Amino acid sequence: MSEALDQLLANNRRWAAATEAREPGFFTRLARQQSPRYMWIGCADSRVPANEITGLDPGEVFVHRNVANLVVHSDLNALSTIQFAVEHLKVRHIMVVGHYGCAGVRAAMRGVRVGLADNWLRHVQDVRLRHRRRLDHLDAEAQEDVLCEMNVIEQVGNVALSTVLQDAWARGQQVAVHGWVYGLRDGLLKDLHVTMDDPETVVERFAAALKRYPRGEPAAGPAGEPDGADTAFGPGAL
Image 1 (cartoon, rainbow, N blue to C red):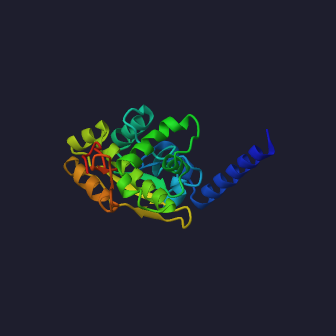
Image 2: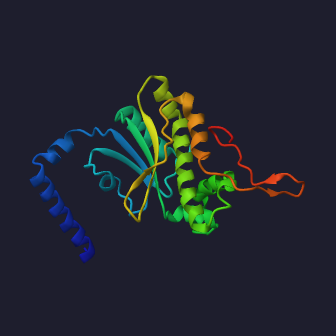
Image 3: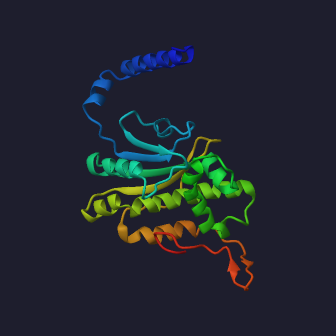
């Protein structure tokens, strides 16, 4: 085994010993039951560790991660994880968490080819196209930051519109979906104020969250029609 991997195993032994010394019986209790109150849907970026950012111990947050923190209705991996969290673990809060400086969002914003992942990032490109009038008038850095936020808002809407959440709310289960963005430069989480906890308010809160981003002046199309208008999205056209 390489020295690099030996170091990881040594680090693990030190961590386990320190954890047990700090809290005797921790691993015994952890092995008996998993009962987190929170689910974290985040980016696969290694700089965004859910437990450390939120100050939670293992077992306190159920985590699903992928490139650019997307929730796609055809992605059975994500949907199965959400269903397990909601129906079996009974989590009370689902946080969709993006981060500034996301390479996936940057590639979608700039139209940069990265390979097979281009097909996955089409979902971010769709967000960019739908809301281009809220983006095109900004400078390049601001565009990427705002698209990171808009992508989170859209994914919160996708979670809320999933059959898993709709069924949970229909049977009276209390579970809320939140949208956050993490700052790599300062280590802080930003609440995007797009919490959805009731099927009747999904459209309203989605629309209100996106309307916080002003539109720029539309360019005139060839027939005199405004170009770059927002297009429809699942929770409703804006």
